[in-house]
Length: 227
Image (cartoon, rainbow, N blue to C red):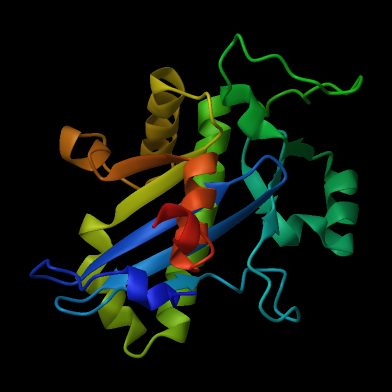
């Protein structure tokens, strides 16, 4: 079995760069990233600390849920939204729990098998793209804090790369151009990229099937099959 580093080549760019892979799942989400240093073999990191998980070491996934107040303002997300005190506060304040929101971006021809369950109403004044964008924004800001806190000279590192970050967004097999366009709009809404051709060009997509295969290759699990 080849080591993961043996399958990657040194970065050939001339300036330091950052790639963020945001995996927004139906029920759980996570972030991976690589800091690209000229001449160095990229190393993939995972964001392993999110708000609400301070006492859970190495947990790289958070629930894909949010709470919105009655004005459509997001009040809590991820692990924080499952905290008992936050749940109690949400009940007292009449906040709306938003989950399974990724399913709202699906192709119209893709039927849901919900076993009798229904998607909850969207928060006040929000579209499905807005809600997805809010969660992307949350993941992005969590990642920024994690990188600044865990890397040497984190603030300087972030300042050097923040205006040209490359993003990779995953989506289910069968999603195509229309769904990718919605995800790009969500990235703009969430403040990840500017609303320009240059900004939108910083978004790349990978199907969940492709992502799984890449993970196998990077870990040497598929070396014998693909050689």
